Length: 112
Length: 116
Image (cartoon, rainbow over the protein chains, first blue to last red):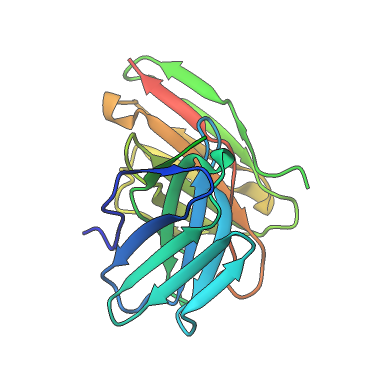
């Protein structure tokens, strides 16, 4: 039972353009959504989060959008840089729980 | 902030052997988590500690797996009678006390286990 889904295993974008990574979820009880970035041979590092009471959160080049009715969120990276090339994981959690549930990840390649 | 430290980084073992991994969380973090990641998948929750108490253990963990966090500081994850299916990256994470909310988990660089 995969509660958090990232249906695109990979994405390739030209440097300077926008990267849009998508995530869908099935559990309407999720209260928080987080994005992590992972480089090879390293653990995931936290990027940005959003509460279910908001529909947008922005931090520099990174913006996360949440559409609760569609159970969909997306991470926008503008402008994309080669250093952004990594695997991006979407994760979700209920306020009553400490458990973070991850999607399977999307590998982003930003071409110079 | 030295981050979450995991040792060893790599472990190769023969099927049937026991292995133990260690995790040192960020010092002020009272919450500690173990996750497992296999190729092409996201991290999967294994177990969670708040201070020294193990509050949840995933159904993914068979009784060959045991985790401890004595004195609420470092944690160990032991796998007994390893099987080839145990080959994975084992990730430890910690988070700060207070409301869970969107408080992020801080991950270590993991221990990669290969069972031959």
